[in-house]
Image 1 (tube, rainbow, N blue to C red):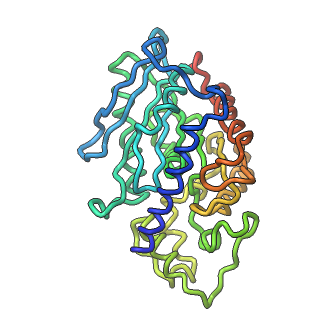
Image 2: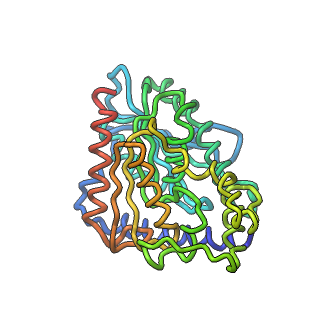
Image 3: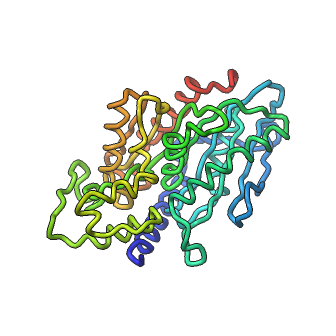
Length: 325
């Protein structure tokens, strides 16, 4: 358990630094930001969707409330499943709202000493259960939602993919696309061994190696006991399926935009290659963008990061146009 906690702490620290750099140093000249005021929209903060202390969301609605229907864009915060907050994504949510969408940031119960029962799966369930509350609040304000897209960063990207690939079938409104950056998409042992050493290499499983640390990490993430013997036999794959978005992709999966750093030492880059292969196998429209010189923060490839943001806009225009929402 402790190994998993240490890993999660590193995950949080790595993303926090990269996120700080991108917010404080804008290499794009304001192209992907907006001056937020009442002429753009209104934000309603800390709305409730459940009994938990973290069961809160921020709702951004566009100033133009005259349309009959709107598209909803959810953006889920990063933080290694142990930290982060929806308020940290205000810039992204404002940008999405300025494009004509109802936008929402959702908090979820983080894994901590106070909440040791929280894990990737329980968080994903909270997010799934929040959506009807989000739709009802938007409706109350006069914004009728008839479709949605979901995105996120890092841990939030994982949750966005889980909702889009695993839970879209039970969504109250159709999911039209998913987007995000650097989120773990699946948990195969061979991807998570010595991650970051070689971006194009999947490490062979050594039958004599001690993989107890990986077993503990996967146990923390999945909220299920995963033993070394289960890793050796392959039985663990069924245990991690609920938190492995790439394992849910099929021919009905929604269009996807994603970005990953080739030298990521926080999550397994090889897992993102599996995501790409699954999208290709089932002919899912997608953009898989690799930042060849970057780690988890995508901080060394501004051109590729700009391409990622441009593709988000392009896919939203194609699959959920604001004026046609």
